[in-house]
Image (cartoon, rainbow, N blue to C red; front, side, top):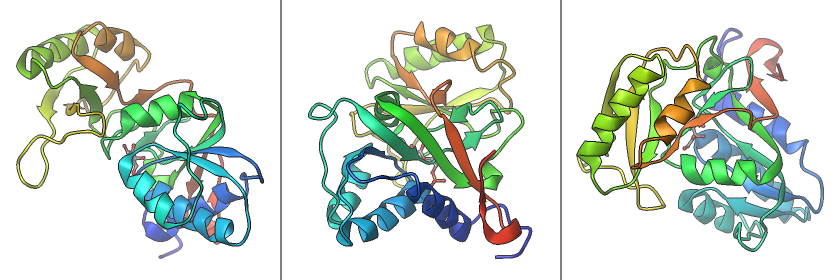
Amino acid sequence: MSATDTSGPDLRRAAAARALDLVKPGMRLGLGTGSTAASFVTLLGERVRAGLDVVGVPTSEATRVQAEREGIRLATLDEMPQLDLTIDGADEVDDALRLIKGGGAALLREKIVACASRRMVVIADAAKRVETLGAFPLPIEVNAFGLAATQLAIAAAIGKAGCTGGIRLRVGADGAPVVTDGGHRIVDAHLARIPDPEALPAALGAVPGVVEPGLFLGIASAAILAAARDGAAHVP
Ligand code: 5RP
């Protein structure tokens, strides 16, 4: 890691380590998804095995499996519908703490868990910080029924919200459509820039097949964005 690095596993781990300072005994925690959130779960597991008592609600099956392996006590959101703090990664963060999430196809559960939490804190490396959202393709979780019609309607909705660009059904390495933990599909909108993020959820929400877009607006309360300078994590 050089002094000017803004991305990489060491930085993601640094952000995760800083987030661990926010965790207090007895807390009900939302556990995010992705490589940065996985670093947090690993560090949390070490604390739990050293005696910290917390309960976690995972945002994906992958996180549930990892957290169980780490020995973290888990509950479902139905068992524990109000949480103190969710720690999760993001694909993009702007200075108004607006996020693009869903690169790991977990956006629906991530949003439900984050919204059930008093605080959501984003952990990421500084390369995720952007002036304008949209360079990262916006993931949109959609129902599996009527995919072709839903994609046409999404393309029209995107235009109405003042964005341009193409959309693509996300496929895995095997060429088959990615299936989310909820049994849905992901459509990625390649928009380059989203000039008015607030206009998009309403436009996309009017499309019947759309389950949830990966725009998180007014949900995150802070972001820990690790940069190599000073070797420390910086909160904007
Ligand atoms: C999963 C997500 C992830 O938090 C996001 O993709 C960031 O992942 P990573 O920490 O691996 O860069 O939204 O749906």
